[in-house]
Image (tube, rainbow, N blue to C red; front, top):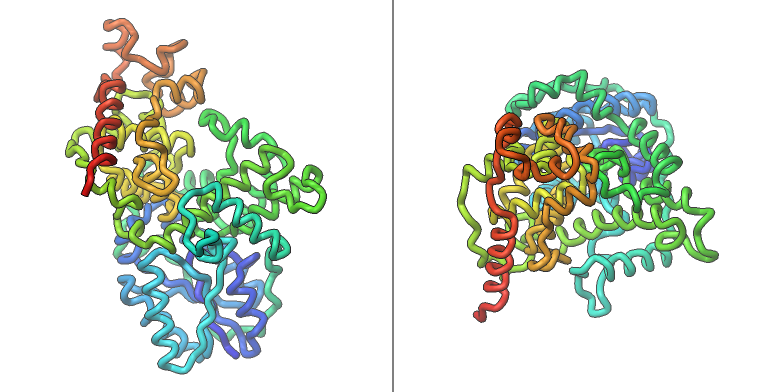
Length: 493
């Protein structure tokens, strides 16, 4: 058999289910393929900084595969519609007779894979698709009535129970070495024709490489370092944006230089001295480790929702009743939010962190999302799109799930009457203003509570700050949002 391994959002050699299976069935060489699709990336609002990370990672992947005598071929498909034909053409060109890939669950990706399978069937080739983007196949975790879970906590409990019943988790070993290939690895482009990176000038290539190193070896080292040094403090440190209290592995998970299995296995190994007798330690032991595993399961939950309720992939609210919300139309407010010029320091710090680094602390993502949807009362879809266009870790399932949670339109959503106060969030999670001073330098010299609420500073001093007045009154707009959601919740149809 001569299989084709089709890489997508799984850019690694270790613990790659499809690669492992393909390598162990190949007896006439194994071919690897990645399809560059600028039209597909544009349609999905893929951030230029994420594209840059993917291209740099492909070079690392090519080198890792070459050590296994596997050549990585890179081909271009202008649109998503062209991808199946490109895969089919490579199989013909390389005389492959089987296609291996790991499943993706967004609706467009699922449709692409159905078309690819159809072309392969017509040619008499076998297709093998595997669960790898998530730990458990979406749909395997169901309620007692056979339905998809729509609330996280019971989903997590059922998922843990299923993992335990299957004997726990293991990560796949390296594939065995292959016979030498005739084809040579393709050159990986620095930029993609038809997809203008348009990176912020501050994000020069050298700074990007330093800020976001590429490849699975770096991701694994980062995971090991977190598991050995920081994970036990995760529950206490995770909400403090002014310090590095999280793993920062979300970009690696988004493009697949690390797997969720590897994450949980590393956490379990760190937790083994705490685990209860007869338990894997998924939900027992050190509180920091237990909490981090739970966060990995949130990603799992949102993939599960993406598969079970595909309307969330199409700009629809998970809760249909919330489609009745009449969001405001205010381009000036939206632009101020995007640029970090709302006059609310913690919000502006988060938005500027996004522009400067391509990433934002998770606690602050919730703060800025609630501010957009509950204080500015702008449609959550605007924020969801802006995040995807700028995040290095943009991942539809998690991004959509997080935005709909904040907007009170989604599954397991924050109750509409629970609205974050950005001022109290700032005081609680950035008490000394360290995070604000990093990203809003014009406020750097303010002391005490003034760093959180510069509008309280005497007028003369405030005029020297070169910092905007708040766009809206937090109390008034909060009350308006609560009333608007209460109205749509009580309407009978």
